[in-house]
Amino acid sequence: MANAWKKEKPMRPLLLLFSATLVLVFIFFFLASRPSSNPSPPGLNPTIRTDLPIYPLPPFNCEECRQSHPVIANVVEGLSYPFIYSLADLGRLPEKPHKDIVRFLKGKPFRRPDISATIQGLLEKFKGEGRDNGLVVDVGANVGMASFAAAVMGFQVLAFEPVFENLQRICDGIYLNRVGDLVTV
Image (cartoon, rainbow, N blue to C red; front, top):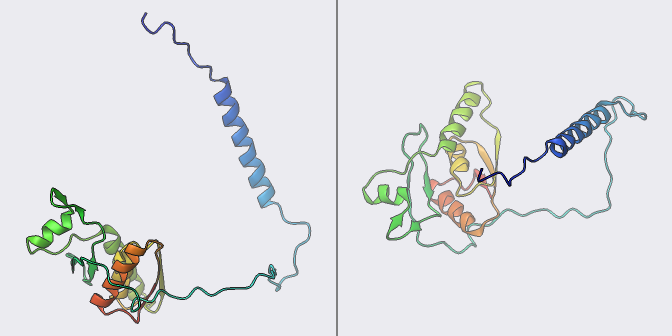
């Protein structure tokens, strides 16, 4: 009887909110799937014209960027195409260092990142099909694990990363892996 003062919350507002959302979703799909009343003739591709100037985004210049320090880099274990990457997160030194720093101090290679194994497995399948001249776009490249996994296989890579410290680590990896002609940041 200690919880007798608590009332059960009615389900009516929740049911009303759910049904209203469901109706809005159905209306959206109905309107989106309806053919337009003014279709364009076949063969013409409708384009949107704007008067905005287009500013090209220049690639990040690793040679002009100051080098990050300290650089803790090592080879990655367990991949058919090994590569080197530099750590950005050192952990809390000295009480709780990053796991790969502990492995580095013991003389072991870095642990294999899941993304690197996935990328290399996918790109090996493409190479087997004869599609080995593709472009890999790595959005949110972090320290470049997926980018370097693709670059050491010979693929062109376009890597996007907004965090400056991670860009420095990508530049370290570009230099250490000698893939400056394959990776554009």
